[in-house]
Image (cartoon, rainbow, N blue to C red):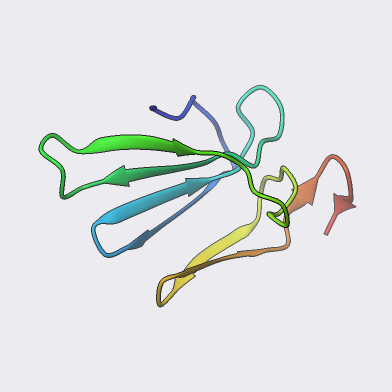
Length: 82
């Protein structure tokens, strides 16, 4: 599933996958999408939210370290600026 247009999201890569997290499409989101660049043609996938994931946010840091994804700070409608 192709992610909806958005701004202030995070994007990082691990191996053959590009990860897009959060941002502000029409309202803040914590949606996670991946683009598998090794597939022919490259394919998007949407991933369901899991307990313990960061709240919907925008304007944050997003980084891959090894095979882990990290979200730092940002703004959240539920928590205010963090």
